Image 1 (cartoon, rainbow, N blue to C red):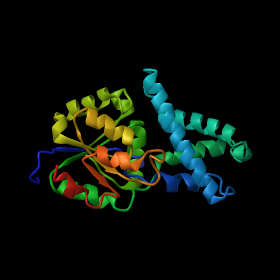
Image 2 (cartoon, rainbow, N blue to C red):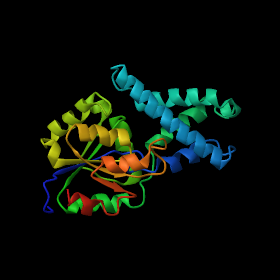
Image 3 (cartoon, one colour):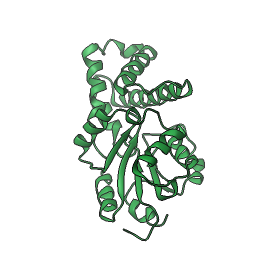
Image 4 (spheres, rainbow, N blue to C red):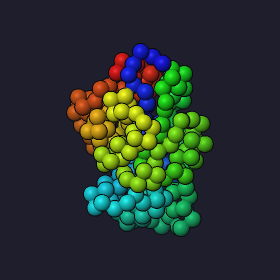
Length: 235
């Protein structure tokens, strides 16, 4: 392993490793102009985050992501009634199922393989279900040592308990681990738990965050994962 005290690298999945936006706009009705499909997809994604945050605040257990996505899609279409007639029940089901098959960002596969070759253990640590993560590994071709979902852990990120539980399960101290994510709420939660953090800037995510603030909050701020192994080696 590289000369570093880091032993484990935890990855958020959707957005961080996976280009969910491309998959989402492909499954939305093609009669909607592409720029409108893009806006709908981004709004749907944010509504999903807001729903998870509300459940966490209310101390409710994680919900099956397929149910969350379907419910937030229904709410989204009420806000955009000009498109509602294009979404029959079959189309809605297809839109939800599409989240189980998303491609990886181009540089992610070699970045993860480089980390594994250097001796690091790599994990998915993301909100969602285990079935979702298994399907996404299949569609993306990405391989990890273990998959940790909010369903499996029983709590959403960024609750401190979620980070502590993942670390306990792999017997790694917070200072021996790093969270890699494209979501400010996630790296903030990891920092609170004592982990190192690497923020990956993706144009599809954190659209309401001030990136000048996010840059100051993390050990490293990267535009992609090309140099990920190198910067983790410096932690």
